[in-house]
Image (cartoon, rainbow, N blue to C red; front, top):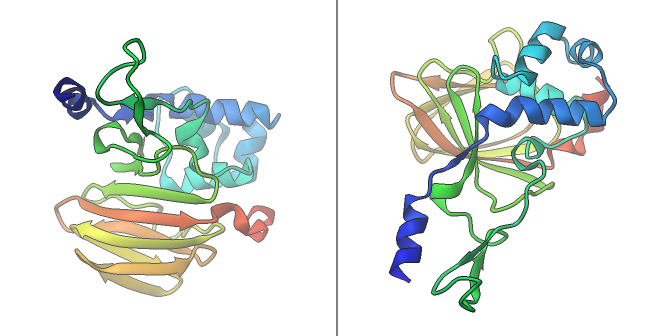
Length: 223
C-alpha cells in the first residue's frame, strides 16, 4: 500500500501543451474546415492557425475560445481528445487480484492533472477527473503581465463564469467596468458580456475558475 501511495505522489502532471496543436488540427479536420476558412471565421491569419497546429506558437485564451466556439466544442475537448478512463489501484494490482479503489471518474489527484500552456504565461489545469461537457472546472495560473486578451478586444462566449482567487491579484474587465480581486475574493458573471482577465502585480495569480454551459449561447457562434 505504501509503495502505491508513494508512486502516486511522485507522478508528474500530464502536460498537454505539446499536443494542443495536434488536437486543434484533429478537431478542425473532423469538422471538414480548412485552415484558411477557420482563420477567416475567427478573425485571425491562416499563418497563426498553422503555427498553432504545428506547435510553433501557443494560442491565447481568446483565440482558443474562438476556435472552440467555431468548432462547436467545449474547451475541455482540448484536454480530453481520445482520453481513456484510468483506474487507480491501492493495496494491489490487477495481476494480484487487488480491487480498484479509486477511479479517475471520481477523484482527480493533484499530481496527475492535465494541463494546457497558453500564450503569455497562462496555464490551465483541469480539475475534473474526466471529460465533462457541462462544465470547465480549472485551476488557472496567470504569470505577471499575462492577460486573456488585449485591452481593445475583449472576449465573449456562451455560459457563465465563477471564480475564487487563491493567491496574487487578478483584474477583470466586464464591459466598461473593471474589478480587482485578491485572495479569497470571488466573482460571477455572464460570459456573453465582453470581458478580459489579467494578472496584477509582480507575482503569479492563481484561482479556481468555472465556466458553466459554455456552449449554451448560440448567439455567440452566430456572431
